[in-house]
Length: 91
Image (cartoon, rainbow, N blue to C red; front, side):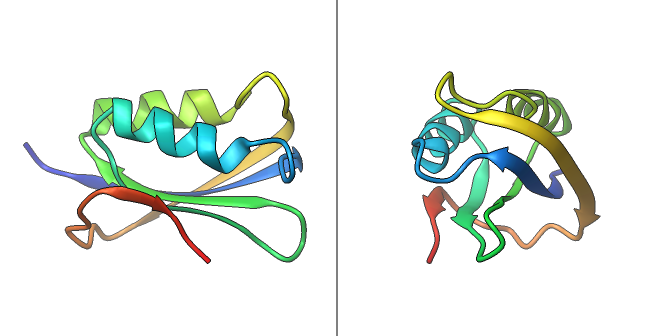
């Protein structure tokens, strides 16, 4: 199985609402690796890698996030897989 990596920047009401914790839980459930972190501009960045199917499912989840969030937009870019292990909240 070949891993892919996507870096998503989630805009909207996504900080202070448990978004990172919920995203890490979802990523773990899907068997993904990487990090989720708050950025200074009020967005959340999810840098995740794993199977294409799992990454696509995670990207779909990021479109709405947990019930406490209000996602307005998700920007996604491709990146080379790094062989990350586990998923965690960064910074």
